[in-house]
Image (cartoon, rainbow, N blue to C red; front, side, top):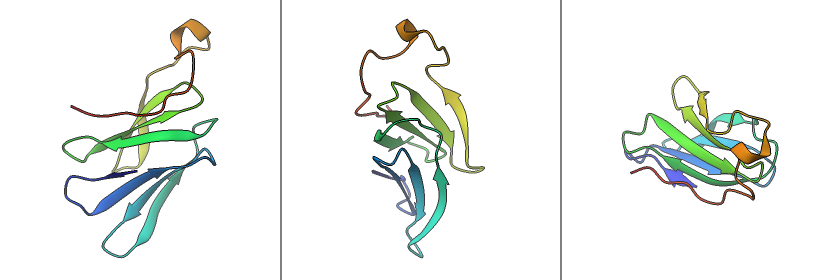
Length: 95
């Protein structure tokens, strides 16, 4: 899981293949993302809090916009196994 830089939002990844975005002011779910095909092992916010990344056992890393809540980049867009990680992705981090 990862807290947004302003501390108002949390993103969490799960073994049910989902990612959840949470509003920490009212402790409510903002959105559930179900686009990974395997467990989500790592999530992290960008330094500006406008995007977050997710890594999964499906060997992909995805980058998402917080508002509007949608995927903006998939860092493995090929079905060719040489273009993916050879094993699960466990962490991610922005610089």
